[in-house]
Structure formats: structure tokens, C-alpha cells
Image 1 (cartoon, rainbow, N blue to C red):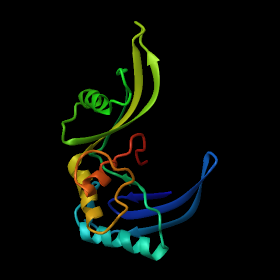
Image 2: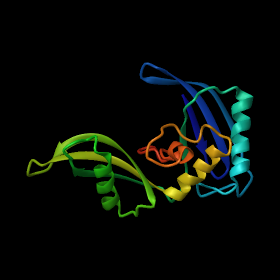
Image 3: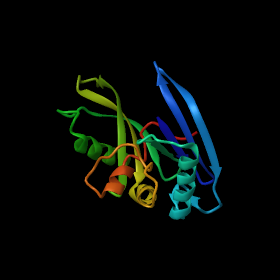
Length: 180
């Protein structure tokens, strides 16, 4: 398991191993970034950030094929909410539309969510508890450009129907994992 944390000042990589219900840190590395390479989560110097990331990967001999990327930005919105339970929980488009309306964000935001549970309201209507994240798509696209620029670790899961690099970066804004 590989985790990459990119902030305005640093890139941090942590390799871990699942052991039961715990994660054991196997290796970690950090690189300072030159001021302005990343600004409020937006990668402004894609080639340099990709080069730093690739250097860490090469130096550490990292072979993992997937990574979880954490982005720090005040443009990312996190929210817990109760929504009407759809007929099928597999209908992610319907859930994303309800989240988008509830959060009041435009279609220019990338929505990701976790269903944290189910409950009922006073009238016994079924509800789902959602932990959602809305991330500007242009912020995500910067990480996709980083992936296309040489870093195969721009994201962990591919979804959506966009270009391969953009699909890899679609899951950049992991729900329920705001950086402290």
C-alpha cells in the first residue's frame, strides 16, 4: 500500500503493509518543494512535481502499482449528510447528484463519497449517511497532468469515462480523509 501526500511545501510517500486491522509503516520519505510548485493544492509546475515524485519512487525502488493520493486545499469541501436512500446503492450517479445539490456545488466539482451507514427519519423513510468530498475538477486535472507527465502514481482507482490519465486522477479527493 502506497500513500502520497502532496502539499504546497512537501511531497510525502509512505509505504505500508496491512496486518489484521492495523497498518504497519514499511518505509517513508519526504521531499521539500520549491515555493510556488504547488499552490493551495493546485500543481502549478507539473514537470517539476512529477520529477520529484518520480525521483522518490526510483530512489526507494517502489513497485506498487496503486497509490492513494492526499491533496491539501481549501478548495476541497467535506461534508456529512443524510440523504434519501435510493432504490439501488449501486446507482452512484443518483447519489452524486443528491450530494451535489446538498453541497451546492457545480458540475465542475469532482464528487466522491463513502456510505457510512443507514437510518430512518421520523416518518420511517430510509436514509443513508454520507461522508462526501467535493473537489474542483481543475485541481484533479492537475494531478492527471502529473500522471501523464511521467508519474504512474497520480491516483489509485480509475473510474468515470474520461481520458486514461484523467480517470486515474478522478479519485484524488478521497471522502472522509481531510488532512489535519
